[in-house]
Image (cartoon, rainbow, N blue to C red):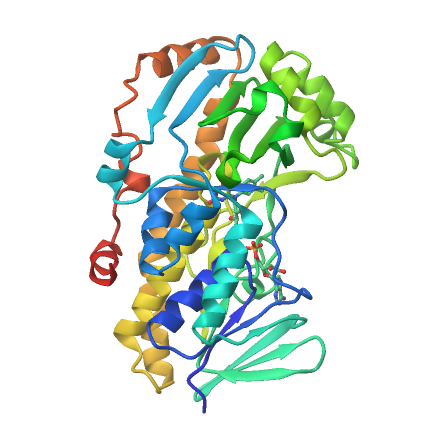
Length: 402
Ligand code: FAD
C-alpha cells in the first residue's frame, strides 16, 4: 500500500498543504477538478499568522515581491468620510507578530504555490473531479468522475465552501448571509485619483462596506464592495444585482461613491459561511480550509486559516505517522491531532467574523457608539489583534523551520 497523501482540491488551502507536506519529506499529490490551477483575478490580504507560515514554506519572499506591504489598516465611516481609527502595519507590527501584513493578487499567490509544489516534485493532477473516498484498514481509495482512481494513506478534503467530501461528516448547508460582494482589480491608470493608496482602507456603513488596497507593487488597485440585499430579505430569487449595488451605495460619501464605477459588474459573490462542526475526521479523510470552516470574509482570514491548517496538518503527520507507513492507527492519530488543534481556533475565527461584520454594518445609535469607541483607540494598540495574528500552537515549529 502506498503512503501517498492525496489532496482533493488545488486552491490556496490544498496547495499550501501539499507544499508543507512535501517540505516535510512526504509523498503528496493534488487532485484538482478544473483544467488548470486558477484563482479569480482579485486581491487577498494575508496577515502575519499566515505570512509566518509562508516564510516557513520558503515562499514569503516571492509573495512579498509580487504584492504590497501596506502601511496601515484604516477604518473610515462610509457616510461621513470621517477617519475612525487605524492599525499601524509597520516595523512595530512586524516585530510583534514575527511577519508582515501583505496584500497580493490571488493569481500570483496561486502561481507561487504551484511553482513551489512543482519544485518539490509534487504531482499536480488537473481534470480530476473527486467523487468518492473509501477508507480501508490498509489505505484509502479516491475515485474521480472520469473513472480514474488513486490509492493513498490519507485524503485531505480541501474542496472549498461547497465541499462534497464534507458530506462524509455533516449534512449541513452553507448559510447565506444576504450580503453580496462585488470585486474589481484594475490597472492603476484606470483607478483615477482615489487609486493612489499605500494602505488597506475599509469604509464602514449601515448594511454595507467597501475595502480598497493596492496590488502588484502599486500597479493595480483592488476593491471589494459588500452590501445587504433588500431583495434577498424579501425572498426574491434574483437578488444582489448591480442596480441594488448602486442603490445601496448612493447614500455614501463622495469618495466611496466615486469608487463604485471601478467594480466589475458582470460577477458577484453572495456571502455564505457555515456553522462550525465538532469533527473533521472520517476514517482516513480530514477536512481543511473552506471545506472545514468557511467563514464570512470580514476578518480577511479564510485563506489565512487554510494556510494555518496546512502547517498544522503537516506537523501532525510528522509527529504521528512514520514516513513510509500507512497504518490506520497512526493515520487516525495524526488526523485527530490536527483536528483537535484546529477546530477550536477556526470556530472562534468563524464566530468572530460574523460579529465583526455586524459591528461594521450597524446603523443609528450603535453606529455612533462604534464610531466613538473606534475613534478613541490608539493606532499602536495591538491588544485586539494578538489572539488572531499572534503565534499559536504552531509557533515552535515556525521557529524551528525558520
Ligand atoms: P477554494 O479556494 O474554494 O479551493 C477549493 C478547490 O477545490 C478549487 O480549486 C476547486 O476547483 C477544487 N474542488 C472543488 N471540488 C472538487 C472536487 N470534488 N474534486 C477536486 N477538486 C475540487 N481570505 C483571506 O485570508 N484574506 C482575504 O482578504 C480574503 N478576502 C476574501 C474576500 C471575499 C469577497 C471572499 C468571498 C473571500 C475572501 N477570503 C479571504 C476567503 C478565502 O478566499 C477563502 O477562505 C480561501 O480561498 C479558501 O481556500 P480553499 O483552498 O479552502 O478553498
